[in-house]
Length: 412
Length: 209
Image 1 (tube, each protein chain N blue to C red):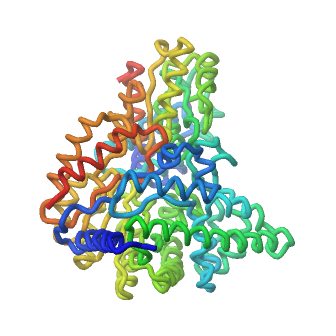
Image 2: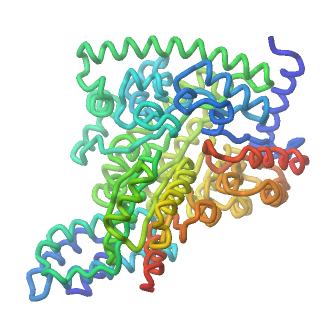
Image 3: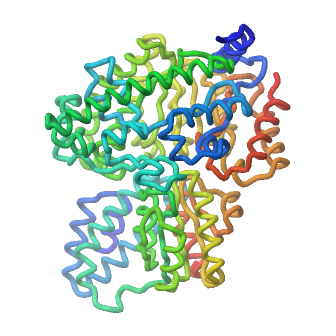
């Protein structure tokens, strides 16, 4: 049962985020909170238990959010980007999104070559990791362009999943049946977590659904990152045609997320940092921009996480209409970004996790005071970490110092 | 022909660079000239990267060109023509299985004359100790992409210190999440979050710049 106070708290939190995205000054700065591997350590469990034991995972998340409340909930059963499967099953809206993140128990069934989980392929206290690899030859671009869905299903899926390598075989059929069983169980577990979060005053539903720059599908899942960089020089026309073909499929997939209640399309960019502004503008940005505009036309805003240094490409966001969404910045200087994008694009980030890992509470207080002092005026700012994962050994007093500083300096 | 090779390499004209290198190698002393020119070109690409004119895409393309050309150049070199300015043991630390950053750095470091011993990814701390004992490097390079790698690097350096080897080597850490603060935290001697800076600092640590 969600109490009226908690319902009100959830509304306040959602309104705070929304106001920042709309470039306004809320009552106080919206704060995403910190999280990652440290959530499991704080609960006294291994990373393996956190990734594979639903009850322990839920208990750890609740303990964390009770002690470290923020404006959005963090933690839960995470997973690794399994976009190939969403593309392959895009014609089945009830399934495509279900397959997107491959978490630990799902990977036990599928045995993905790109996936490494703690207590399975890695040490019990390691972070889960995605390993890129080449799953497509340059000669196959024409096949990809002609039909990305068919190509992803028939050619790529068997190459990335050890248990789907022979489509139609008893092994592959058994894997899909088992996957359905795992997903049904997880749906029930996720329902319990959603209820617990609502009881802690976190907004229900209406969250995010994923979206990807089309070139990142090629780089992360098909050709591997260094190869797509070379392909841009060697086969520029084919890379462009492939990005356009993939765009159609991915927009369709993201809008399935909207139909299921999501309001924001969340794009984690990957190849961005690798490209010169010239290559970015010519090969990466056109289909990414069109993607953002097309989901916007359907009533969604977007969140774009710019991995690494995005400084040379920041100005491209000005091609979009003001209020289109927000950028989450990793190494890009948030102050410079504010100078360029103020009044146009909301900015999130600014807390360097390196400082949280290695600093002292006093230094962190000083760091946060300066950050909030520079970033809050004028609104359009969401305070959060530059990357989502704090390691297990992060000193808890440093984490507490961040939350205390947001409380102390975060009021408008 | 050396100037043309240098220019086409630095301008990222892959086909032309490979074609000229193949031609040049057939001339007298050609293999050594190709090697020297390609090293010079890699250095220039690194400089352009640090100046903000080139990006990772150019480093990757340059590394690929360098490897393509070396494949047919190295077998033609006489012993003694490949001089090394020092040895580095290089690996991704325990818990991290990423290799792209390490591999980009590796080819650039080799092109700069560093003898790189790549010991792999997700390395138990002792692997670094064993490799230091075996190869007696001047430098140790530790790479990590994910935040978990920070504490893993710290522990690896502690284990190296416990083995009594810390004072024999300089340690440079590299990867997406490293910074000055992280370097101080883990007790390394230098840090770089891009390959060009990493190579420049490695050479400085070797006293070669």
